[in-house]
Length: 445
Image 1 (cartoon, helix red, strand yellow):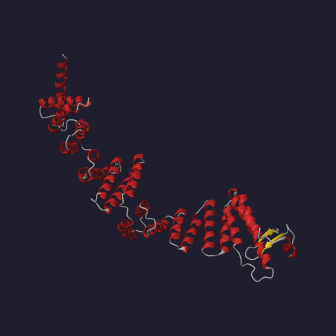
Image 2 (cartoon, one colour):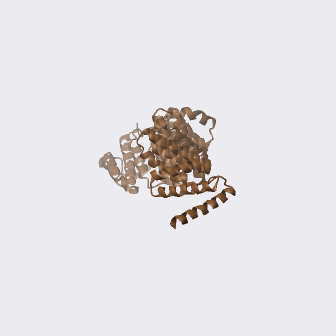
Image 3 (cartoon, rainbow, N blue to C red):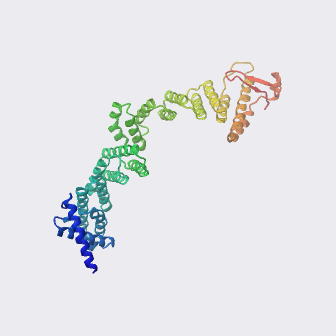
């Protein structure tokens, strides 16, 4: 009785399928009712064996469906992935494995022919290929499938396809099958795809793919500074205001460790002109410091000061300028002026007080030629120690360094006899002369 019910159901369903064919899907289940019944029987038996993972029993029914009823059900192709994976993984010879892999490639193409969705299926085709064949010299079928998938995906690419395509390109380069230009082209191509896609929707998978692509490119060995410069230098020169291009090449150079190249410097300057910021100004200042171009270092530090709205950050820039004015320009007064401006922005910047104190103790020529030059030179240490004391008051983390400086330079104070000889007593107010011009108090060593 059970078999009669099943047979009756098959006949009824086949009639419905034939009617459906006649209404606009002619040939999907065969050209005759008998074909439809046979198609349905194969689908049923294939499905049953597949669900139980009886792949050997399922294979003949799958082949019949692929050959005679290729448009009967999408499940032929969806379940065919597991079926063929089983036979590939259990193949006894390379020839047998390759035969099943070729069949799988044909299966994906046939799915596209009858059910469309080319971008998705081509991606799956390429990923399937590299899951079962990692011989890079034989990469062409899977590689081309991934490339076509990316071209058709628009702003909805598969992160897995992106990362696999970058991985295979890098492997091809290491195997000597492509040159460094191909790796760079692939990197820029994938980066553009990701960036355009992220404009439409933010996806965690795409962000992870972006990080992976950058990592693979940086480690590929193809990210040669000369190659990047050769490929992009003219393009950058011809399009100096193309922010998208500039940012792309900037990231390329940065990820490849080419931050000391002229192209990187040129692009950084162009981006700074187009969109000036304290950060870009500081970057340029640091780059010119490496090039020993002091004037440009100072120029961009000043620009950073002008662009910075945060007073505490601006104070740090001023202190940097103070150090440069001393070490590069040997201009103590200008150096102190910058340090004072730093303290105006951030009174708690103890390092600025330390810097001024060190400027004072480095002064040796203020009172040259004066009759009381020795006494006046020693009064400079009063002003210097005042600064060291202020430094640890506003920033206790400097206490150790400040106390050490106080101990050292207090030893240079004039003694009591010298102080009395010049008409002063300890605690009196005193104004240190020369360019220092600071009020302090008299102290003996």
